[in-house]
Each structure stands twice: as C-alpha cells, then as structure tokens.
Image 1 (tube, one colour):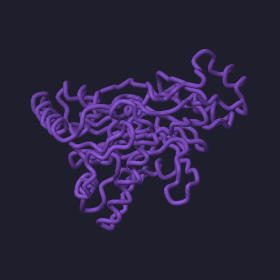
Image 2 (cartoon, one colour):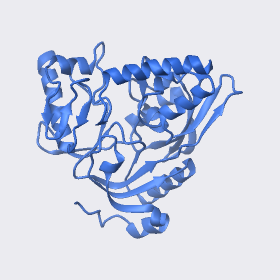
Image 3 (cartoon, one colour):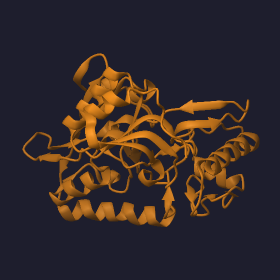
Image 4 (tube, helix red, strand yellow):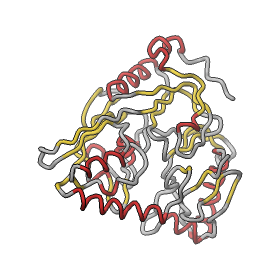
Length: 326
C-alpha cells in the first residue's frame, strides 16, 4: 500500500486537526462503487462551519484536498489520491414553510434523496425527481444533478459558497451558469466549495408527493442495476442516450476483471465483487472507442476521475480531480 507523502506539512496538519485527521486511508470504504486506493489523509466534517474551517486551513497551508459526500459519481484510482480527502457529513436541514415560495435549506453534506423525502412528509413538492438520486446537496449543486426531466437549476434559490479568493458568499442560478450536468463550479475546479443551499418547493399534499416519488422509485428499480456502482457513467449526448448507444454497440455484460457493463442498463458499470479502478477504466475506454467507431459519437464522462489513470492514446498518466459529487 502506498504511504502518504512526507512533503506535506504534516506537523501543521496534525496540530490543526488533531485526532480527527486520519492518515493513509483506503478510499474503497467511502465510495459507492467500493473502489479506491489510499488517500494521504482523511478528514470527516460534521457541519458547514467545520467544513469552512477545514477548507480554509488547507488553503492556507497550500495542501491539496478533495471534497466528497456519499462517494457516488467518482472513480478513485487504485494508486489512490494525493492530499487530504474531506468526507462531508454536514447534514443539517431546515424547512422554511412560511416562505413564499416555501423553501428548504440544507447543508452541503445532506443526502439529496433524504432531503426530498423529508419535505414530502411535510406535504411539499418540487423535489420528487431527487428522491432516488444518489449523492449530496453540495454535489447536486456542483454538478447540476437531475432526473425525470428536472434538475437543480429548476429548484435552486441560492447556494452558500466558500471561495478561495472571495471568502464566504452567496450565488444564485445565474452565478452558477448551469449547463447539462455542469456549472461554473465544475468548470473551475478548486476555486470554491458549496457550504449549503436553499431550494424552492411548492405546496402539495403528502399523498400526492409520495405517490410520484414511489413511481420514480419503481422506475429506477426496473431500469437501473442494484449493487455497487458510480451511478450513470456517461452524459447523454444531445438527442440520444449513452446507455442506448452502449447497448446498441453490443457491450452489455462486457467484463474486465471484477467490473461489468450492466446487463440491465448499459450506462451503469457494476463492481461484481473485487473490481479495481483499472477494470472500470478499461471498460470506459472500450465503451468510448466502440461507440465512436460504430456511431461517430464521442461519449463524455459524467463521473469524475480522481487520481492517476493511463491515457488511452499516449500511455502517459492523466490526473483528474473530483470535487464534491452528487
């Protein structure tokens, strides 16, 4: 197992975080795919203020870090990641029923589906689409998460942002400059993180909201595989679906090591038990190359790669960093 880098200011980090800082931690235990090598250090935060203090300290010490929530939508390399991984468990929420329109405020580590279910119990609609979406509020804001024809752009009122140069500020939808599964935050990684967000709701009834959520959940169970995965692997290209293209290319059930392109939904790559990151990465390249050759469509990853992976065209190493995922 790779040991952590001695070049980091470990004494300062240990002084700042004490026993909360864990060192040389295997990340497979913190990802939805159950895949990932060791991180130099790991820090769990329990509130937005703890997150703000941790990130500010790491910026001041010039230590690289990666912020993750539930560990979905990322693939961590087998060699692991440099720097500190922050596990975001800032989960406080507040339903603001008297607002016009009603809203829910949630810290960025709150589970998106759990927030949707809590507002449903109070008889508010607007987040039915989010009930089965894995990931956190922060990741959803960061990546413009969506499902069933809706996304964060349609719900967000404002996001509380901690910016490296601007400090603590608030952004609205226009500031986030949303695009399909993208935002200004995602296009400028490392500049800022999400502390919390306020989402727009509308009055409804518990029965109506839960009925729609149950319909979405049933559809998910019938179309998406159970088990350990990262969620949707590729973004849907304009006018088509990544899963349809991969299926039409005859790749359902294709395996490399312990990883498989799902037989149920071809845009999901499943850890069948002992998959390594390189197994999944090889399937990514097979899917990309085959779909490009067969249909002339270049598939773009929806997940983010964290750590070092071989570049399929040059054999060199490519390092991409994942931030707060949905």
